[in-house]
Image (cartoon, rainbow, N blue to C red):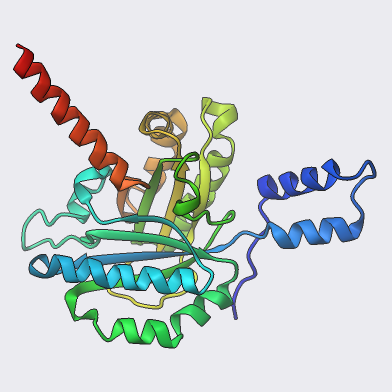
Length: 290
């Protein structure tokens, strides 16, 4: 049986404030019920793919077709990243890139898709749909992939609605448990410290999820827990990961109990491409002037 998504206080309070904008009266129980129904946290789905190197174009086309089925089923695509060259790895590089053949990387994916649906049931409706079945017929262009639902802490926001504003990066922590209880404590502590980040360290940690996975739809990576938070800039994410709360409380609590890959991923890769292009163009013009 599925776990009902939890209301997110941040969104809930905002919804009640909207109710108050249109009436001078305190919200009625019905107003509160309507607001709560509107702001229930979504079920997120972490989708990880390793594309065959010699079939990259076809592999990315496969992911695009899967992405289209998500939006057709009223899902939200918060992030899609296919270019690891733009990822900033904080910890666990050996778990993403094989150090040598005797110790293969457990999270050696090359593409990430983070999506959300209003309910856990809608995730399964999407996954069992005829559209997804048709897409999966062409999965031979993907070396391996995993699809993992996880309880969210807020609404999923589609990146198409964030082009002109909002956060620009998602900090992921992908965990394979070596011992259950310490890792469960870790994700709980991550939620607690993340929620207090603005007060403690002066930056807002916009938590998307921090939990053990609540289901497995495709299981070709050993993902068992995931923390994800969105950030306006790389600098703010660095403030979080450099903080005493993170360095002295979080990292030691998971260090010996999980294989972890921590990575900052841009939400808008096209903008990263433009930044690189502009930097190269500026350097070329400087050399020409010199």
